[in-house]
Image (cartoon, rainbow, N blue to C red; front, side, top):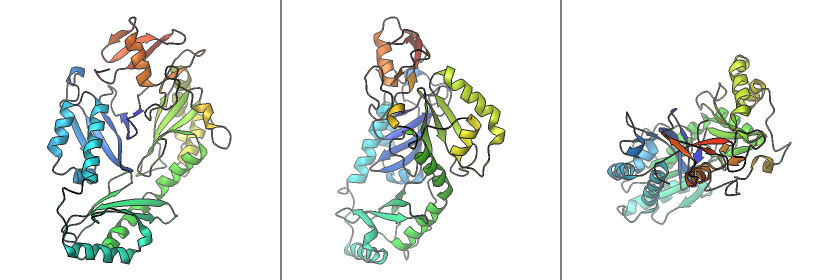
Length: 376
């Protein structure tokens, strides 16, 4: 099974190759999510740590990091593991977004223009604004009443230069074709058109959120397309919806004991021919897998949030148990980090490449876990 984990309350990354060395997902900073990817160099070795990795991100984040590219590459090369780099990156972005002292003080016409444009769109749309009026967040509604936050970072020479806009959508939208006569009204209309593109995607995801127990992410955002859905018996499935074709066959990764998940994978492969793109993804999955998902209407979430057998908690630094003992009579779940530390402390544990082979702390049956870094 592929390893999946949340990194310290701020991101959801999943491996994008079989070796578990490349990753893609989302980074959350100040309530916004940015799509990112980390790609290792050719012939990567574990002892390289993060040296040689390539960091890719969407246009909005590129704009925020403009002028800081060398710092990001330096921190990437110095990081011991993915988690360490993500912490460093979150700190860099947070400081950039929060530090208005380093910006040039806008001239008086800038403030008159901003206040006039806020009058035009209506102050009731305003969610937050900083003291310098260079960071403004507005609340927008799409055609079915879903609320969205749009954050705008204004340069001191606005409107000669456009603001950098941050919106929570799955794919970075094209920029506004800007000229100095444009205003906040033009920006809002542009992003309202962007939101309309994803109505069917959000209908699909809202249906999953209402009718299944979603284990991850704990607080889904409009920019996220992945859901980890509880199946029962310490099993779950990660579904990744294609934002361009949200009702098409989605990518599914089953988590849990192989003896329980293998039959589901077999059914998925055997029944794909009955997938109907007119139906919602949840409906298709239930038909293809020949199951009914546990739901808030039929069960309690506590039935599917079993505690880790080592730390005795369900959520640990935003990660949930994702390793399960394969023994049917045991089936004890563990956090990846907890099991890794347990096996490292056991002198009988064997290491081969980036895999640790040891014994389940409960039943002593064989259990394996992938080493995510060379550090403990």
